[in-house]
Length: 104
Image 1 (cartoon, rainbow, N blue to C red):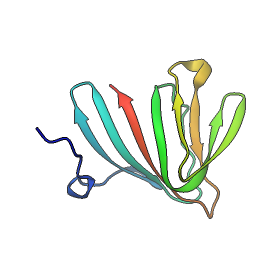
Image 2: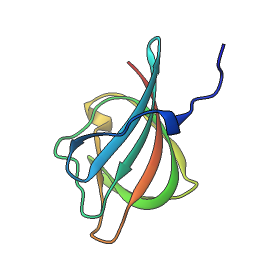
Image 3: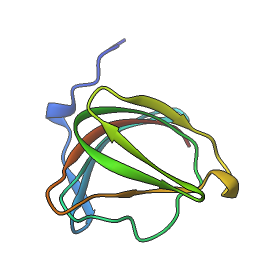
């Protein structure tokens, strides 16, 4: 059984301009490497649960009633639900590479 995820062997997918990701799925869990380019803003609020770790760069995480700036090395957890809705927002000169841990 392999215990390591080799993201180098997984293809990048670009569902929309300014965003790309690689995903590894095992059972009901997904591990995503996610990259946002400068000026990117998620078009919709996300209400899914995520644990995350910022690998490189920085960005703002817009919450329903707050805005948090995250930088390389930051790790956190976002619960599911409308009251915990969130979206990534990047300034023109920002970029970010993050690792997301998700339950499908």
